[in-house]
Image (cartoon, rainbow, N blue to C red; front, side, top):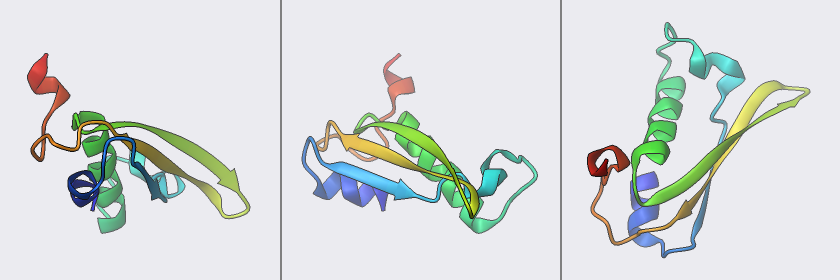
Length: 88
């Protein structure tokens, strides 16, 4: 849904992605659960896609470790997959 958020949003639109840490399972390279893999793909897209400027925040509460990402759409007109790495 991040790609659609960037396509439909305007510069300045805020996108929040919840549950990105998944009790720390996101950093376990042996974990291939679909929710964990989806979280990894989402964070990778936010890191690499020029349409977003984003950060992730880890949280801890009675349920354990989790977190969320907050992204600002900066360049909605770019085509899907515009990568920072490709420009450098």
